[in-house]
Length: 390
Image 1 (cartoon, helix red, strand yellow):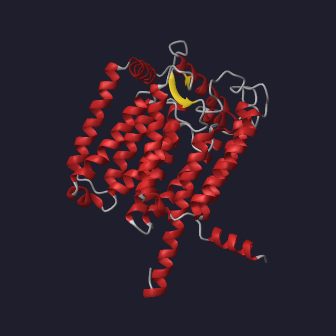
Image 2 (image 1 turned 30 degrees about the vertical axis):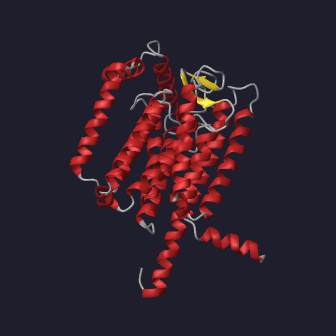
Image 3 (image 1 turned 30 degrees about the horizontal axis):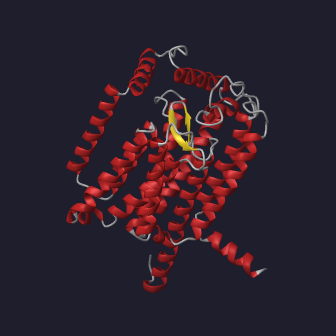
């Protein structure tokens, strides 16, 4: 056998096979569902399919590169701060240049730069995990001994949330807050400080509810719908989305209407190929297909947290836990809003929703997980050889 082929096979054997298989299944499934859901929303039936395949390929390239990279490189200051500064800088550019034509405004939010194919928030979410992992590595005692490091670990996420809120992008701003609380908790932050941070988060949320009309309107309508058990699609565009989403899920029943037989994709359900693609999954594949999708995310979480538990150092542990939480939280919130359990927040379903930035970023995050796993396995193997036990 060719030496390079043997080296490639040996490299794959060092990786978490279950995680790789899960991500590949989710990605390929996503390509198929994007084609089903988006084939009638564009002038060309294959427009979204071709773009999703290209982005999936680019994402796999990023995964392969990062899986082979020493993840310790990511904690170097020029990488850690540079990546975060780039992401936050681009977010602020979308806010400052909103009316210049360089920013693509969609649904009242300026999240894209017309000259950049990457959505800035996708850079921020991974960069913030890496940054917090670096700041919190060593535990709370290290933070306690260095006041500047502690306040930096709080200030930078706060700046990130404010910048995203100015776009406005409230869903991703809330996600940054969640990731911050998770990583601070894992670092061993005392309960009293976490309570204060939680109270601050509740206070900021309440302030947003009472001062920002968009948040107030959406939450009130969602609460009334939950309370009354009925959804009036005439009350709000987002409630119309949820109403059509539930119709699709209900039509799917146990086994679904069949691949390619969705009625919601005929422009009845807005964003059927992006944020609300899980409704098409439920309609075409039924409850069985929806449960299989959920199982795949549970499997991803199991492998991700297992990598965190067996990481070779605390930085790797925190990065793995943060990235896994990020992927699972996006999945949970997306499915929650599609099923009306949560209000609409405009967050995509990882690996399945149409969208290049999110797909590439999520696959890159998996590449980092695989790098942590690979080096953790190598470290345990060396320990076995040296001392005779794991």
